Image 1 (cartoon, rainbow, N blue to C red):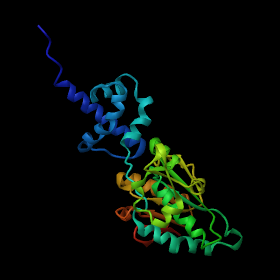
Image 2 (cartoon, rainbow, N blue to C red; image 1 turned 45 degrees about the horizontal axis):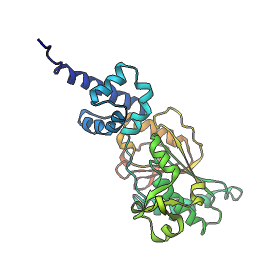
Image 3 (cartoon, one colour; image 1 turned 30 degrees about the vertical axis):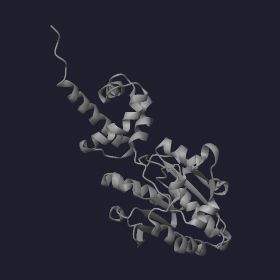
Image 4 (cartoon, one colour; image 1 turned 180 degrees about the horizontal axis):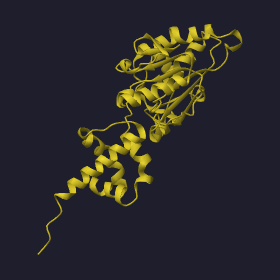
Length: 287
């Protein structure tokens, strides 16, 4: 007689493995994924597990947690579960404030000998580069009116796949709908042949912008400590309050005196520090 299939135990093992996975994700990148997000997580892991030949989530989890596959898969898992929502010129009020007020005032308050020093901007959750290249377009345009403006942009993210897209700087043309027409003409190269329907950011902006992998949960950041402006938008909402406070404290330590931290419009309430004063919605200045 055939033995009964282990149907009741499989879901239990699978649930236990899911709990292990979400604990690991929280430890690594600070993002909590409750049981209600299980279907989303499994969906995002589907392509990876299928590529490895695992027909079910349970088989993939067994490979990770019981066959020693976790270490080799960790980057792939983190890439799969991290959110990559990004648009050019997203939350445009921040960019208007940057151009009209933050950059001119920062340069004006510098000693004359430092006016041409690099104006440093950090896009701390860069994803595919839309925010970083939005900043590059705006600062390049502004440099025509502010001859002292010499800028550099750093974009960081934990997801290696999106960073590769950012470094290539090639995007579907429809992704450029929010870009002002004059900027499209000036800063985008139209693709042809195999790249028809795509555009690439012009070399002048790519040379001003660099991308690197970085985990915001790391206790120390390998970033300059005199950043003029940090964009940390729509990231803090994924962290616990304790992790939010730690990340904000680290960000402050990398801001130049008088530097600015910009967060998502839904995140202003989580920014609490005696070292910062709020000067506009979701915009803070270091004392």
